[in-house]
Length: 125
Image 1 (cartoon, rainbow, N blue to C red):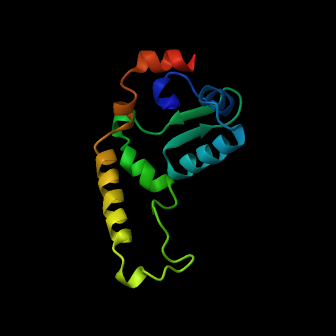
Image 2: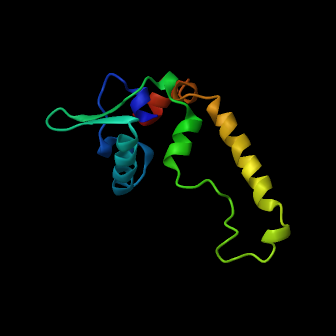
């Protein structure tokens, strides 16, 4: 969101971490993952920084979530092994709900969630 709100300026880890009040170390890991996936471009050296690799209106929120989350499983029925697994439908119901959740997110782009750019930029200032 930060990079999409300020496309004319390269972002940097420290500013983003401070703006969202999150750990700089955690953000470094997230950004590295986004760079590896091709969503963010990292420019090194003097005058370097971070920028989106795509226009915000072409980034599907659902796609990004699918590609960045290791698992979206709400429950893990195998560890420890649940004795109800052979007769239980909970996992399939939760899987269906997760798919519905992702289908809704597929209908939104990054640009859709930053529609109030003026107010969001004021909050980041």
